Structures are given as structure tokens and as C-alpha cells.
Length: 218
Image (cartoon, rainbow, N blue to C red; front, side, top):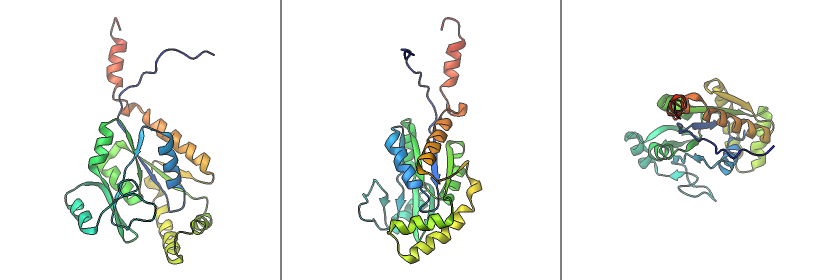
């Protein structure tokens, strides 16, 4: 079948604040990287954090690394959409760059925990879409953490304890996926994002389009 020469009509829409959460090792960071690599309209929210920079990380790309006093000042000045205290360090999503991305017609991806997702939903309401990714089992999760070979035994034990607590908040999300196959889970996340972009409530250009459609002579 020959392709239609009619150009696709792109209507103005509201951006999506797309949250991915999971216990450490369940796959959210891998899926986030693949989403960003394949979707030019999706940009990462770069969190501010008080934790030390790790080898290979770039300030302003992976995180905005700040000291504790600076972070506290940002909290006091209401500069975060959400922030949380995780593993003895603080993480937060700055408002200004997120607002700039939305104003540019972009969607924003958040790699945050359940506390951050809850705060973001309270602040931004219907603009937020929350996806929680579960491991196929806790034994599989622990095996993945050990195979990464980046954490001490103490840290792994702490991550597993935290994982159980995080999983208990699964019902605070719009979508819950089980990552027993990374390619299938990634495809499901892509489908969720596409469907959310197409929601009528986000198609702010529809009203004008309908008026033209129903006006004689157009």
C-alpha cells in the first residue's frame, strides 16, 4: 500500500511528567536510558543530590552535585518539586529546568522513589504518570545487585531491606510492571508513554482544531 502524502497533524498538548520507580536493581535505570536514547521528545529531570560523585559521573548530566547547606537552602526557597532523604543523602527535582522543558513542549522523565512520586503527584496532579517496576522475585533482585559488583555486603543488605519497603507502595502508582524480560518491559513502558501523550485531556490543541473542523468553509 502506498504511503499517504498527507502530512501528520501535530496538535499542541500538555507535557507528561513521567515517573519511573523501582527497587534498586529492578531495571528502572536501564529502561530510562533506553527511553531517552529512542525518544527525542523526552528529557531527563536532573536531580540535585548531596551524595558524592561516583567515577564516570558528570556534574549537571547525571546529577547536580551540591553540598548539604546548598541543598537545605534550595528546600527553604521552595526550589524543588519534590525531594527525599535516601541512604543518608538528599535528592530533589529542581522546578526551574523542568518548567523550561515543559514550556518547550517536551516531556520530562523522573527516576525517583515512591516518596518523590507521591510529592510530585501532590504538586503537579494530572500531569504526572507513575510507573512502578517490580522484579520477578526478591531472590532475583538480590542476585542482580550482587552481579553488579558495585556495592559492599552492608549496602546490599540495606538495599534489600529498603526494597521490601518500596514494594509495599506499589498501589500508589498508575501502572505496575513486572520486569522478568527487559525488552518486553521496555516496550510496555513505551506503550504507556504513548497512550498518556494521546489522552484527550492532554490534547490542548483539540478545541481549536474541532472549531475549525466544524466551521463551514474549513
